[in-house]
Image (cartoon, rainbow, N blue to C red):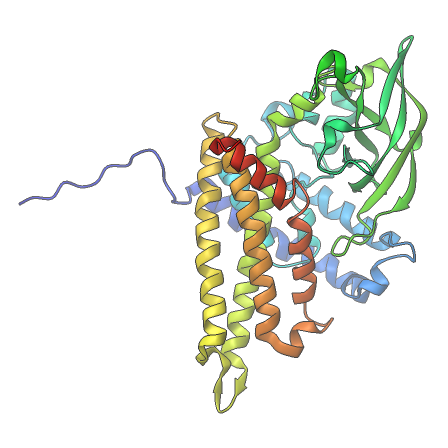
Length: 407
């Protein structure tokens, strides 16, 4: 009996030719452009004690290196390639963007983490820029000439961000902003920040309404302190706005509708976290496997012991499942779906998979895993951070439960 060849059904896990070329080009770029910068910095980069000032800020040489990597990447067409072509991007799909983020992260910790736009770079919310905002803020950010920060989180509010206390009141043709933000990534180095403030009372606009986003330049606010979180030393700060005046043409997006605007792009941020976490997971599994095969104890490689091999096998299985889930999310997004539940699943799964793998790889390396000469404890700290940013584990589970229909 003749067998009928299976026909494609619209979902493919094959890496298309364009994406394969991008991934290969990224490898070359990191090798030829990024790694020499790291080598030139030497111990200033490799030693965390020399990488930071006493207050945690990156030393000037490292700040300049980060900016150089971003600019080189933008010039090569990588940095913000997920944005539409009409705002300076390359218009690549979410599937390609996810694979690129994961691929770069799989090279391990280093300056390569600045090759693709993160929180400091242009995101779809900034792509809503209009008029002079485009030339002044959006395009320089896409070109890697300026960097930004997304200022929403506040002291005492955390995940309950709509309950923010930062306010903005209209005064003629200006807005007057008062309040503070904390844990704002890239705030100490940003040329401008995107600040969320309540502009209308909850009683009038509802919990999620009445919030507006403003573009505020670096000389218009104060970085009152560094928020040196474990795994993100030197990258986050607390901001203060004391009668900060900005012209009305600095409103970004919809007045009173910024929270809804941001929610439109929520899934992208969680997909990006997933790509980063699973790329680091690949790096960790590779290093763990190498060590398990090389290190000998009791007359054989430690990889021969199930207590070691099963840790790595379990990590591989979990990473494979999370990667498949993330690809499905990216595909759904490319087909126009917000995919809120799926994005929460990906963010929750991927960050926890990386955390478990990082912990196991430290254990596989034994005492060597604790050494500052190895990246494994640093990777474990990064994994811990990823379980909180872009929505904590608990927020993701709340979202999944709500979408599931659990009251």
